[in-house]
Length: 230
Image (cartoon, rainbow, N blue to C red):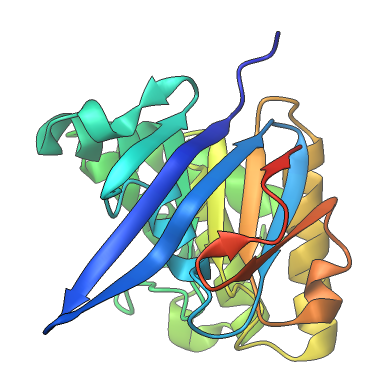
């Protein structure tokens, strides 16, 4: 049986606001396999971002377990978790989070610095990834010289530099026009479908963006409408 890329088992995440306890996630069970592009939709406050943060090891459940590639990431020390994130999870953000003084290829190569590598040693891989996302002619351009869609493609290439099996995208088309957004969605789908071990999960408020994904998970009040295995 194939090990899910991501598995949640009875995950609860509570936050305390004064005297009130907020159930950001309320007993979520979920299993997602690789080779697919999955979207998470729902109203504001439904728990979408909490779900994504738990998948990425940026937050910890109050109870229950979160497994990535069969590894219970809640059992890892902070140091081990940071190392695990670098090699197993790629993050794509709505606001790109590119470093303005670096070129496109240097931005893509930055995660390698955290492994003690130099930027120059990663230049070949970074350049190849930029070609893969359609920016082979922009490798030496800085963010200010790129369009919003081009900056998001740089961010996608950066998420891929360590070849992680899980890519998490938080509103990746939120700052893009509809045509540019469609191009980014197609790229994310191609990335998921090109590797049977890679899972791409996207949080979005845009139902049109969700329509192009393989599976749509709907969240309300900290719960999935249907606890899902896909």
